[in-house]
Amino acid sequence: MRCPIETRENAELLLDYCARKLDPEKAGVLERHIATCPACREFRDAQKLLWDSLDQWDAQPVSPDFDRRLQRRIEQEEQRQGWWRRLLSPLLTRPAVPLTATACLVLAAGFILQNPGGNVQPVADSAVVREVEQVERTLDDIEMLRQFDLVARAEESKRPI
Amino acid sequence: MGVAAAIEYDAELMLRVKEGDGASFGILLEKYRGPVIHFLYRMVQDSGVSEELAQEVFLRVYRSRSSYEPTAKFTTWLFRIATHLALNWLRDAKHEKSQDRLDDDPEGGGTRDVADRRPSVEQSLLDAVKLEEVRRAVAGLPEKQRAAVLMHKYEEMEYVQIAKVLACSESAVKSLLFRAYETLRVRLAHLG
Image 1 (cartoon, each protein chain N blue to C red):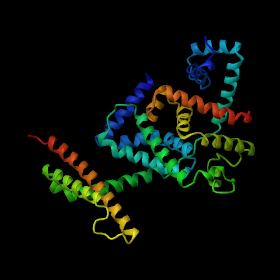
Image 2: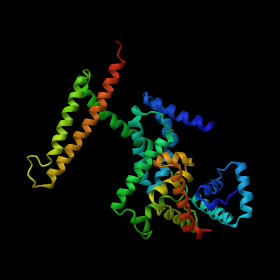
Image 3: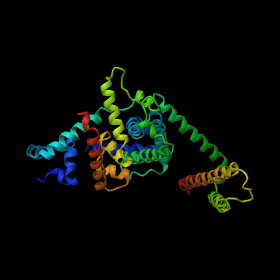
Image 4: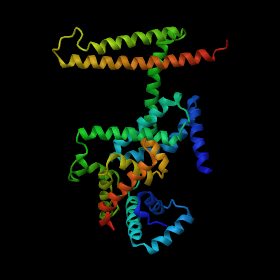
């Protein structure tokens, strides 16, 4: 058996041994090797010491309201999506419409991105910020429409012919 | 066999979430809430931030339910999201010099963290100092090495799974771990 710390590939054996992940057969072979190899013994002792030190770092207790906060966020998101769904439901019944709307929004976003200044005079930073926010919102809307389109198509395919 | 069954069970639960079963999402949350928060806490070393990031992780899992495909272990997917968010936060925090708090006087901004992670007031001062040393040593590792060590040591993940989470080869993970443990052994040698 080659000395495990001669190559990194073999050092993995020592790491696994110290992590108690090595199967008993391999562990036995390694222990016999360690008994005759001072370098490996040193490595093992240092790694075990490190392992014990890391074990002292206990896990944090989780806040009792973690699940409630998550639930609230999920509900908020679903409400927001529900609002969009109600707004767009007449359009979603016709699959071509959301595709057209998506294409229009893509074109609009492209126009805005290609003309960042537009008619707005470069007088205030806040105007630029608003414009960036608007583009971001548009891109969000495109993503949402894309998802609604997928939902619409899925629902369409489920309908009996 | 048991592990394989557990993997299938997680994926099965996620597929049920995909079908609209909220209870299955609750089971996954119950099972992985702790591991995800603990991993994130050890990555960012701030309890408030770690819970916020964990909320985002589970929110993203829920959001992605409709496109979920069990092509990899559920935990690989979960920790990939968690690692991605943690690395992004660390990158942003660097710009805001939040990392400085780790090196500051304990009387400064880091006080809350030190108090937060103490398991009890009876813990001896010596243990607290040792723990602080461990925390600092881990925080001092490069981010990918840190993530690899935390997944290997505390989450007991296999090399192949860590490789998938970090989007690198298995041998790269072994190399990351070897270097990280080497650094930690040197930094924490005096604790023995």
